[in-house]
Image 1 (cartoon, rainbow, N blue to C red):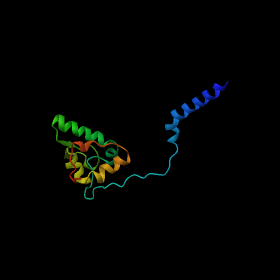
Image 2 (tube, rainbow, N blue to C red):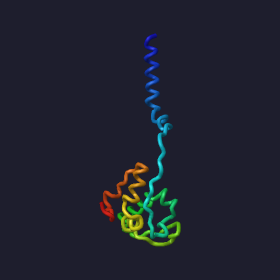
Image 3 (cartoon, helix red, strand yellow):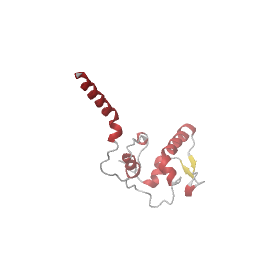
Image 4 (tube, one colour):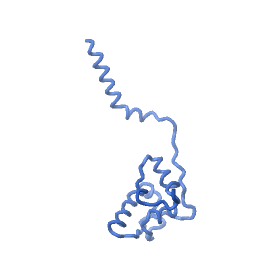
Length: 130
């Protein structure tokens, strides 16, 4: 009979430990706001529409990497937005950062907010320098 209390306590402890990530996520302290990004002042449009770039920019950059490195393709034809049908050079630093400034002003702020690791800079140089 005395072991029954220990068994119930053990079961309760296991349930609490296993479910902690779920119910702890329900308790939110404070609020967060999206980071203020340094948007291009002189550019009228991005190579694709904003919704696509927000949701799928890494798909595009990975495709660019594969096309440029593996296939030797160095030009991209925009598919949507104000630049649809226009050709741009496939270049992270030469195309993307020519409008968006330095990686710290644009890329890093958003990726830090989303807690996403950015590995682009293992190979690419930041034209703004660090």
